Image 1 (tube, helix red, strand yellow):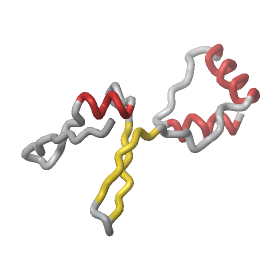
Image 2: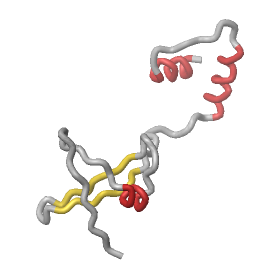
Image 3: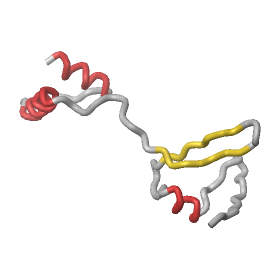
Image 4: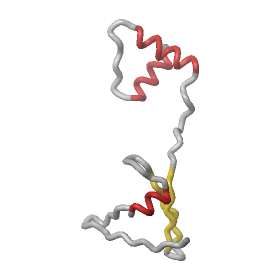
Length: 92
C-alpha cells in the first residue's frame, strides 16, 4: 500500500517523524538513527533506518583478561577518556 503523510516544520525547520513512519522504519527510541538518500536531479529523498557498526572489533581475549585484572587492583583506576583507557590497556 502507498501512503502520503505530511509533517509540519517547527520554528527551527525541524520535523517530528509521524508515528506511522517511525513504525515502518522500526525506529522506537532516543538514539535510533535515520539516514537520507538524496537524489538532487529528481528532488527526491529516501529515508531509512541506519544501524551504526563499531569501527573497531570487539575486545580480544587478552584485553578482557587485562580488564579483569584492573578490576582487582587495590584502589582501582580511572581514566579521562576511552582513548586513555585503551592506551593504558595496550601498555600492560
